[in-house]
Length: 267
View 1: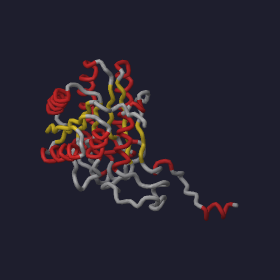
View 2: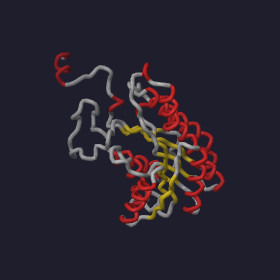
View 3: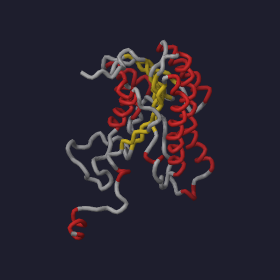
View 4: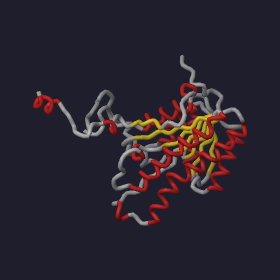
């Protein structure tokens, strides 16, 4: 059996609660970390969501406790991370899930929506990296930090320009914090989901290349959580500064689509 090195570890997941109309990255990541043996401090702005994921983890035999905070506020983030670290008795793994896209044409986004989107998707990641990093540095035992980016940080983000800009910023923050924190034994990485939508958990197994977007298949929320788990684990102990794309191959497609019919015409 492969040891993920997470048994007995102490983990923080920011944005751990499940919003039904969303993919559930925080929920799946929290469940994965708990199943691997970590105790999870589940941070969420909504008390009901935080308690619900804790109850789900405990029902599955894991250990967790809730922390309620608005992580877009620096003061709240500072308080919540300190509370989580105190409750855990230290920290080894820190995961930031929070983010949300807003949709409009680039020429129509208001300054207020731009500012809100950057705050939610980039500034709070900076807060999380900085504040969690301080605890890991002070502790002196290394650790892992993982944040969700997006494929929209690598390619055009049509009709959601502020979100794409913010996620490109997250990719940059991952590299910079990884560079600065490496001397402390702290790894910093990202996961970039593709078109997960509201979850894709109901996809039939064994069906591939069915939607014209993904050469393999659209990723599911639990695929994203598996990437978070991997980067948090001992299997990734020499991986840092990387953003792992989990998009079913959507962003690797050729600019000019070549299918079998096109090939036959060129022969």
